[in-house]
Image (tube, rainbow, N blue to C red):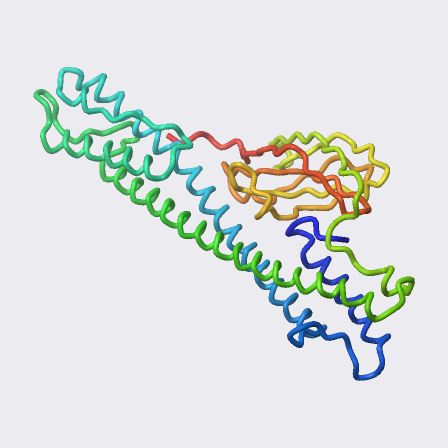
Length: 327
């Protein structure tokens, strides 16, 4: 199969390795095919193995990023709830004080980490200021339901800041490792282009080793129509249930389920979840959803026998174990 994206890198290179092995076997003894710069089959095999390592490292980084994103997404709602409670407390019980005009604004759930940090710091400052300079008639400490004191809020703020820092560092690692993977892939691809040009110079044009040269890209032809994907969390089975419409393409090879924890869905770091043969139109999975509250994006690709493929719409599924909401 030709290259169709990161999920096909190794399998396509393996086809070239097998073909190059056959070419060397067909050439006179001790005269294997060597490309410019002394690049031989052994070099391709070494580069392929190095690329496999890069892919594994990137996969690990992706999983680390997804873990930190889950931690962030689990901690933000209760933090926002506490900030809202603090504002309501001041408006309701300290309504005659100057502090009602100092209540920070709440921020959208999906605001960036910088805005979250500012909002948390502002709420913490308001809380500590009220306790340090209480208005007339109010006796500290200021306790929210729980009871929940400013010390607990400070600890939760530090924890969420730590998650933001860890996530930023992990995303930087992911970006670096993706760049390293792509750099090596492009170098290998350039060598495979040379290989495809070299082989026809060694054999007649109708020789089996010429006619069977692996392709780098899908042959010219049609791209399949995308299927429509839906996804829901199944509380009974504890799995994400994915289902899609059927492809009517006569060249259908299989469907492939892939996932990405990025928002929006990022095809450059998507991971393969499963391959589903027709007539199958469903798949249930827990991949990318390790804990309650975790969210994952999924796509289903129609893959043809020619290597052409087309991805569906992306759907987002959130794991819901039926636990009570945070206070």
